[in-house]
Structures are given as structure tokens and as C-alpha cells.
Amino acid sequence: MLWLSSCKSYQKTAYDHTRKMRVKKLLREIEKHRFSAQTFESRIGVSYRDPNQNFSGNGKIRILKDSIIWGSMNFLGIPMLKFYITPDKIQYYNKIDQTYYDGNFDLLQKEFGLSFNFNNLQNLLLGDLITEVNPENTQLKITTKSYWLVPNDSLIKNLEVSPFFKMLSGYFQAAKANVQLKYKNYQKIDNQNLPKNLEIKSGSKQIQLHYKNIILDKKLRFPFKLPQDYQRVDL
Picture 1: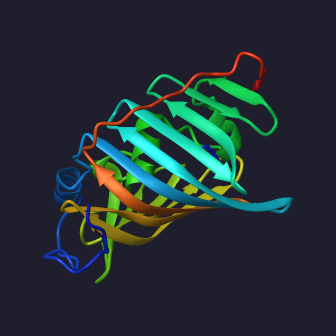
Picture 2: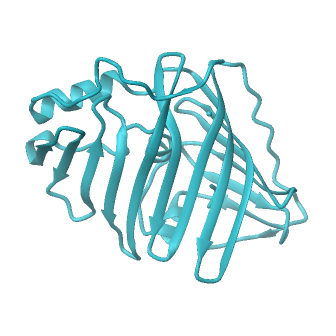
């Protein structure tokens, strides 16, 4: 898949347990606790598994809020993949098989059966509520440990939110296979709760991301150029 300064595991805050509230109030709290820095950089460990292959690697992810998601991945110590994502398009190139992609978000629809856009992907990586929900058409179930949003939606089955108003899990009934998201741990960086581990399951595919050495609001570069001699990947 094209796819954390001081760093410590999430510790209890004023939001260490849920409180009674209505859907609209919960959505306002989620909005108040969204990622607020202008840039994000993290070293990242990646593991991928499906019935035919199993590999792991490491790299970096950089984000310019609402504008660019950039990444560089290495597998077995070999530079393998670079990607550059903006609200308009996805671009990547694979050094192993010398291919590249330069197109729109239909790529994610093909791979996972989800009609994701840039905001969905940014929210996914930062632990924010992955998609908007209609408060008039959404049930809220509250347990002692989390809030469960259950929209009346053919795609979104449920979204689990932590007492500190970040994503814990999500379940989507996508066209090709059911997609499950799980945020196993959070860490507090510059007074913001950010993911430490993220697991994505889509049918028989499984991706795990491990964030470390996160730095916020650093001036970042996003070097990227598609190789002219690589073969284009078409959907």
C-alpha cells in the first residue's frame, strides 16, 4: 500500500473516560480535537501480508496539512517506493519493477473498494474521524471506554471514537471486501494525540503501520519526480 520533540505513550488526561452526550456534541468535540499542526513528519515501519506475499520495511511520511502527503519506503534495505499525493491526484513510482502511477483516487477504489479522497486519507493517517457523518442519521452508543457512531449508511457500518476524540476503529462494507481499521495505541506529541500503531485489513490483505519519531510544525521538503523511463500503471 502507498502506502512518531518528546515522545511518550498516551497517558490519562481529563478525557480518560467517556461522558454522556448527544451526537452533535460529540461531533463538535471531535472537530475541536482534530490535528492542528501545519506539518507532520514521522519515521514509519510498514508490514504487509496477503495470501501470496509477506514483507516489511521502513520509511518516512510527511504531511503538509490539507495539501500534500509524501512518503518514501524501503524494503529489505532497498529503496522501493515513493509517493506524492495531493487533493487532485495520486502519484507514485516503484523502483523494484520500474513502474509508476499518475492518476486520481480511483486507485484506492480499485485496491480497497473505498471511494476515498485526500481528506479521508489524511484523517486515516492522523487518527482523525475518517469521514463526515450526518448527525441526523447516525446513532450513538456509549460505553465506558469509547463512543460508537453507527450511521445509516450502506458503506460505513461503525466508527469507534476514543474518550480523547480520536479514532479507535472503523468498519466499512466496501465493494470488494470488508475493510477494518484499528488504532492500537496513541502517543502524545506537543499536546496532540497521534497514532502509534495502525492496522488496516481489507479481505485477505493486512497492512500495519508503526509511527515513531514524530515531529510537528517543522519546515519540510517534498522532493518528487516521476522517472521518465518507467512503465506507466493503468487502472
